[in-house]
Image 1 (tube, rainbow, N blue to C red):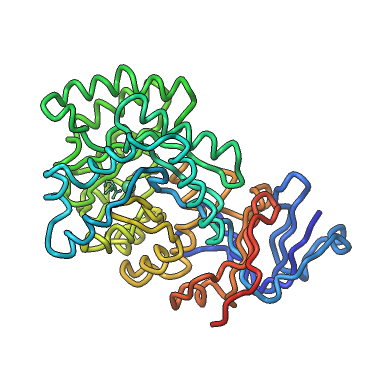
Image 2: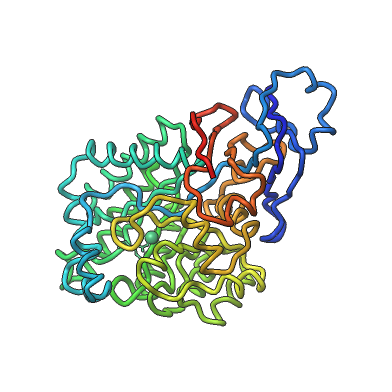
Length: 412
Ligand code: NIG
Ligand code: FE
């Protein structure tokens, strides 16, 4: 049973404790079994006798955290939106561009044109970069296909990536991203296509765990979303929402009503929304890169945490509102713009992110969990997220197997 010793700070991240509790152990050791499950995570001085002669490597006084879980990405898409970025910088508004057929609709065109192989290659590259950031589990949404063949094409890419590993991929069908242009005058037709064809086919093919809906003026009304979530439920898919991102549409309350695993974005959540979430099991997923790119006020993380709502932090990696897959950047923004402490953020990148995906074997290093971990070139979690120093992950392991190692750790 391999042992990792000489850990300055080990964050175990218990899943069922408050946001700020990362189960910190100083001068720690971590051990796992041949099946890649944690068997010991605690003080090095308390290492059981049976592990004292086990093969041991040294963390050399670094910090060890659970493998990071990116609980919200739009991983596979065609094209890019660099031209639109320039237009936005010159004053065009995100929703105005969307109304003119830009925004999400332009990525829908590019994704439909892309072959499955192209989508795979780009997503593969993104996942490899994420490994170097310590990211071991990735939620991946479709939602740029928006017809049966292209939704299935995207989700098949995720199925292949999941099969190949090393990361765990959690697929979500975001069929309710927008009403695609060919249904602009026939919303009912698109709702029926989702209910009668896309949702059943995705569920039958085992292509997704979740069904996501964007509840917003330019996307779906709460009533439409409610109807689609009911269809998704009938087929065994669990709801997730893009909620209260650009306007307050009572998305948080809808997430609670439909028993969603998470409500994501929430920049415009109301006090009633916070109260509803506090009385539920719905995880709030904060996406601070999108908040920054769209230039809106951050979600009220402090009020959510004080109310007892678990807050996960994810990238929202997509070509429009969050063109970065850097979960470390999202973490730092969650500290600096949302006033979350480094410990609270780490919990949101691990145990609470796993909760948003209904996973109970990752996101923590308690005995029995998978030995997915990242070794950080920092003396503490606080030091890791205090300044934005790139390339601080020096090793990433999944099920105890090293899947990334940085040969020359950067200077400070
Ligand atoms: O999470 N809010 C809707 N969907 C994405 C944006 C996708 C895009 O702009 O392409 C989001 O921000
Ligand atoms: Fe998103």
